Image (cartoon, rainbow, N blue to C red):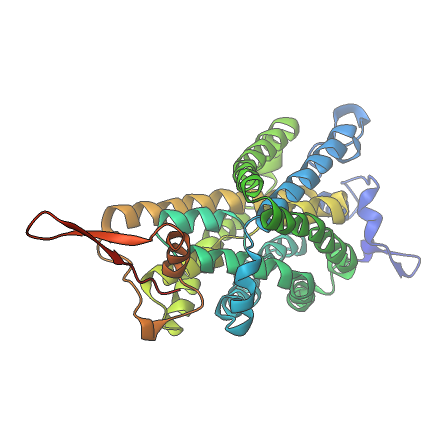
Length: 390
């Protein structure tokens, strides 16, 4: 470890917070120069991190996270939970995809590109996050299993309360000798995750009591997903200038490009091992690669010391950009070439599963299908009772 991090025989990880001269007798840069200090004003003016504007940005990030989690709660149907508990295929897939595949992919990419501790923590945190609402939209566009998509997103969010800090602690051991990892605020991360329970619970209650209001809130949360990311990217880039993006290493951009792509591919492979039908494979693929970037941004922005995390809180925004672009290509290819080839086949009675978009459609039609109309040779009309499998 660099001796400049030691003061009076004790570890002083916040030594980088105080300005130090960059030119020393040895000619080596000071520790503070290794931490991105984008936003520092000229002439000794306070850095961006200490301004009211940054505090307002933190409040905006927190409100955006609450809106997202409220919308997530509005997707949960209490009537579906019993079946999921009896045959928790969706919960099992969420566990494997979000807390086995994605953290491992983030860890391997961080090692492969030799990221420093700050970038590695940002990548690991994004990899350990649960699934996001973007996957629900994309699954709908590729004719996926919407019931499966919603169950995976909701269950991974609840599992994240315990598994996200655990995965972050396990995979960050490779950088244990660095000050940032030694000060890893796992308690604050857990507290932020627990704070999401309130809007999620409110969304579930609204869905149970006021269905139309829940549908409206769900649309609002989905639009806020796009608006929030665009505003954060524009505001941050405008206020901190191009030097912020320039301070991010090229390897971080490559990781942000490859990580969602690897998630989509590994999710599809896992669904193949489970022998799922094609529409479920597409759903699991999108659920695996699409992360809750609002949660990742909020944790990096609200729980980590800004002088230590520096510009790396921009990583989830970069990830969001690439995951949306790659998912958009996924949808485009499916619309052009795969719609007829991978058309969803109806399930037979002996292939019944507790996760099925077909069953969801049947439940919607049950109240309106009282009979079918048939005509005979003498133009007479008979009503025959329709049999529906509930």
